[in-house]
Amino acid sequence: MQNEALQVLQDSKLIEELRSFSETTTFPPDAVILQQMDYIRYLPFLLSGSIKVMGEDEEGHEIMLYYLHPGETCIMSVLGALNNEKSKIRAVIDEEAEVMMIPVEKTQYLVSQFPSWSAFIFRLYHKRFEELLRIVNSIAFQKVDKRLEDLLESRSVASKTTELHVTHKQLADELGTAREVVSRLLKQMEREGKLELGRNRITLLQ
Image (tube, rainbow, N blue to C red; front, side, top):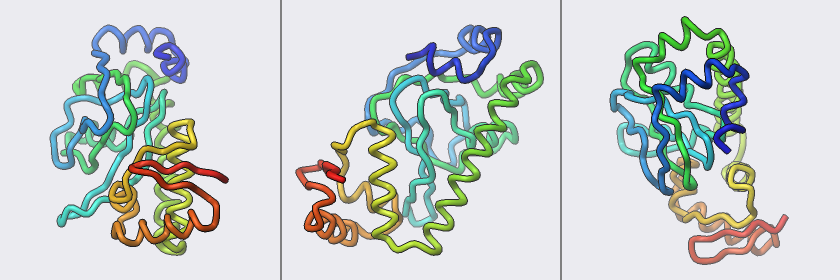
């Protein structure tokens, strides 16, 4: 899985260089690898599993921004590192993940010495910009029920299973709404035959 994820960089010398100064660590679900307002010490390059990237306001309300999949790094962390800024996001392990931790002091070196790294970052930046634009449009124009359906689908795709181990509170936090709202909508979706509810488990049926 490591080699498959790293091949997205399309540069054997870059891959060899990353391996020479980066540590690879396995994290359990719900581990926080980056807190909002922390100084960024490492860029997480995901080798396996999934990571969710969350935004948080001053009152502690969260909203899910995007998922990291194998072969990706956190573009918000890259931008923060390049500008020597504190983190504006919180990164949480969604399912057990193997992560290559790239020292932040290598950021400028990678950009200056490896055009393939810069191209990779630009591709990822474009992808994340489109995802964040969809989130803005979703919040502005879509009802919560449609946003919930989209979130469940994206979680299913990320974990490659229709059986999701997640609480109503977690979903509410990711959507930026109340747990009661999510519980009501999930019950409605269950009545419509779209899913089956269990204890901290949701099985998608359609």
